[in-house]
Length: 361
Image 1 (cartoon, rainbow, N blue to C red):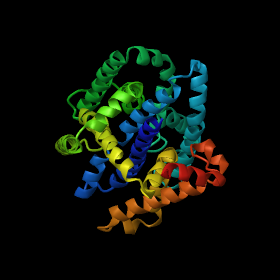
Image 2 (image 1 turned 135 degrees about the vertical axis):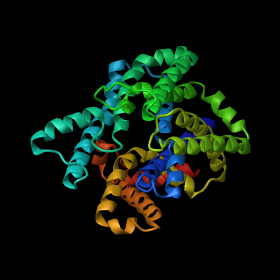
Image 3 (image 1 turned 180 degrees about the horizontal axis):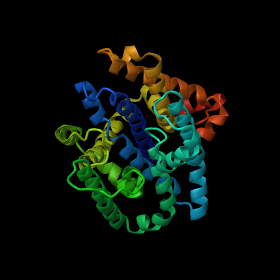
Image 4 (image 1 turned 45 degrees about the vertical axis):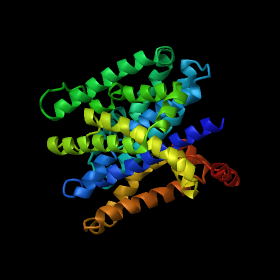
């Protein structure tokens, strides 16, 4: 029982790292064209969204493995947690973007534009992720039996599908191949991401074996391999100028070894035991709300004090302020029960001390 809890904590800590990495991607994106530091930060953090999907597949199968929910019950349960937040935040960001001139929509076409953005996940830069999760959640009840009974077949098939999609999107970006227009961004389609989701589920099925193998690996050797995949990504992105993309073969390679490397690092972190573990656990619990709120914080900062961010220290100041304000807003909102409706986690103050004591034990 202790071992299982420990492994779940390690996964949770990895999720917290992903939440932080998403913020790094979006902050550094504004500086990447003229700052080497921003470029390296941006590319280093590119594992974030793919790894979020790996962790989603892991968590869903782990929690659902011994349950016999019907497909309808599962979809209703999961959609209830993501549909209302998606609608709320899409409307929120649509209004915010039009109000502050990030986008301009003709008043006569407001509803049709909003409808299209809801359909394509383009109301703001990060909401496409929720559209991807809609598709994966919808498919999961129908794929679960195959994933459980024939995991290697599903893993292999999903890899071929996702790798093929990543390759085609990559070749299209390089103008080597042309993809037909389908009315929606290719990056929101589930085949692009299905491998990560199935991989997470596969790890959950074989968690004792796979996670123990990672624990037994040499941290130094893993670091060297991870650095090699990082260098491949850094050089490839620079050579092809595809540094804004998270859908290409080099990202797949980098994400896989990032998951292994970070999980291994978290096993060492577990042994240290400190208040830092409480902080990481908090970020893990609130990762979804942080994901939803941080672009607003970043954009609001850019509007309020544009001159500050144009300085040499602008990148680091904006990164720090976005982290701190996103954290503060999330912490404040977690005190209100209604935050659960829009993707947050409510913490009853009377239960916090008990939970904190448990995490520190």
